[in-house]
Length: 502
Image (tube, rainbow, N blue to C red; front, side, top):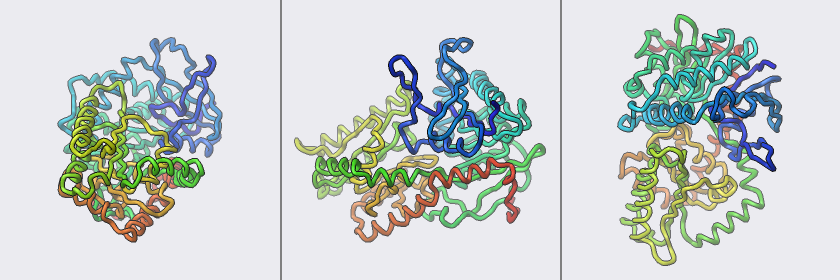
């Protein structure tokens, strides 16, 4: 049956588990991943579909049903599994998306690798996603496309189905034109995004950057802007803007620019944090670490996350403050983004070398200052560690949003704790009460961690109270409501009090 809402995302909306020779479809383990949030939209429409890929040796005879019907706690929906070969996945996702697009999106021009890119395969895969979405969409349906690896889907879909409403959401930063235009396919990408009715971003800066990229390709005249909400301006963040563009007008259509930061499921985290199971876990962890103070860092093994810079900052902390040796320890969780990608192996090796050196210099037979964890930590354990950690130390060099800092705040139901946050994380524009740090400056990193460790309790509680207000305001429900409004044609062009600013 044709769907009123079609979500196009590379991941399937469940985990496939084989039990006694039968495949079961189970809910994703992470409650704050984007998948559960997207699935929450299924309860708001009668018929919905999800388009994702599934690897197959032979795409003409994949060995699985391309279309299946799912019924779970989110409702009933159809899943279209697009069969892709391993070679297609490697080319379109691991090479083009991760080795060419990813570094440019995050401002690492020196990491950009053009040579292995197979652009025809990227186009072929995006066309296949668009075909699947076109086949699933009812007349006048809303199609919601997610993230940069599907940049070309809107343009192809508009050719196939001019009747549908197309929205695209960026889960990464969007760079300014001088960085984005390194990509030789910039014209094709921009033209595809301009085929959308809505293009969404986390924060105003990314929307402004998108406008600069569009203007480098097309003359779109004046772009209406409106003032940014005061609580989305952080004086210490490098990413704060005072105004935000609201739409781009082309000859074919008006493209609305939606800015809504992704949040976390605050209610779920709070329930988990207050459960007896988590309380027992937290008590066990406290007993294990004794009287030491804990700095907690959680992220992926990726050059954008600044893991090595953070470890070096911790080493400097122990060098200049002998009083903290044997007193402070760093729990550094760095999970490989994809074990099939060798590009991350040197990063992992560097983390292990620095952590080993720190433990060799400052450790004892009974105390190791750094615990480097290179595996995913179950979320219930992570929430318990959030409650134990004195400081959440989150200092990526670039990050579209970052939900770890928001999870930490939501989990601190005791009203204590400190967040040290990079001013280059999108979350920093909302979380000005955190201790903001510039990860490119050793002086700034050193000052921030000293400030966090020396902060009096009264100030800690005042800051985290402000952070909780922010995190609770822009949670997953807020994001879902804003995105649903943008997907609805009735709300299109509702901004009427905009000022014209070139």
